[in-house]
Image (cartoon, rainbow, N blue to C red; front, side, top):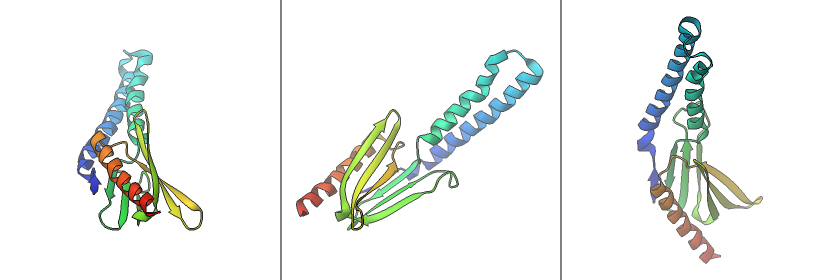
Length: 157
């Protein structure tokens, strides 16, 4: 099964650009307010704070692009940000038989996928992917596919 939200990258780029423009406009409006008009008073700080909070929320929500491929004997995961220099892209490929279990953790708006893999050296290894930008249907499809793999692995043992 293949799952990807790469086609939504232009939307995420647009949102990112819009938030940056709002922040820039807020800074310009704040400077004009402080040094020329002086109408708002203390509330003028919200011209900078509101777009800044939205931008921070957008970045803290995790990497936007998630790709999953379980066709064949290996499982391939890719997780990257739309802005390449913001964080390092994750890319992992491993045989299906190494997958022991998985967990999807949701806290408010943030969703994470935790995979536990069998390892020769340490017994098990945990991998973490950010899946906040996947739709509910995509998350359910991902869970279904991973359930199939985990169930097949338990039957082999």
